[in-house]
Length: 325
Image (cartoon, rainbow, N blue to C red; front, side, top):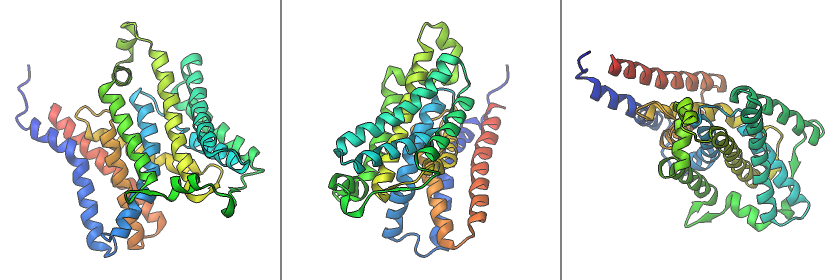
């Protein structure tokens, strides 16, 4: 039997909180490099323009990854919700009906994934990749080759303007919605039996299966829920810009994957978790905003962001190896 590593505990803490150290570091670097970075207007811009939508899509991704899969169609769910929302508002339907229909559109994308994964047995990666391609083609067909669908400036309902640009006690409504989504996901995983079963499926699916718990039904529900959550991002995006742009939701896909897997470093066991995902979203958002303010070329921004993701994950992996040695 090997002797316990006396340095294991400090290294484990360093591994877990390395994400926070990375966030503090980039925040300090950009505070010094860009004088306008710390201004209240820019910090608000980070939260509203960078964090809000990415956080919601990343929570949808976290739901799927927590069950041992991945959802490459979260952007498609957001796009379908956006299209349904704009279409009903243009038709003069009540905003409440447009909201419900948009959420249903996202849920249907998740249900389609659930059928492929749970009923047919397709792997989550291939199933959601196929949904991504199919969804992109459907959007092209619905919009005559990808033409945006605009809401007339004079015909935007007040409720829609409030969702995209309104505030409550000085806090943007869209940000409050994102916080509610994050809080709901945290409660789901920490306080409900369903959430604990989903996390168990992601770790040891065979144990869950042999225990008599309905593995397939839990996975199906989590993918439907992921599609519904992604639909919320599509609704907020439409409410903010008052236009539907085909495949615009896919712009969040790679960063959502990055934030989710960066967030696993915040867990002592390397598992998906809401707090870690939120920190990952903050890290990527601060980096994107800071690089923009420094005037760095867009192409180099991608290199910097990719290198940062690699560094955070590598740092955590090396520390965990040292702890287990």
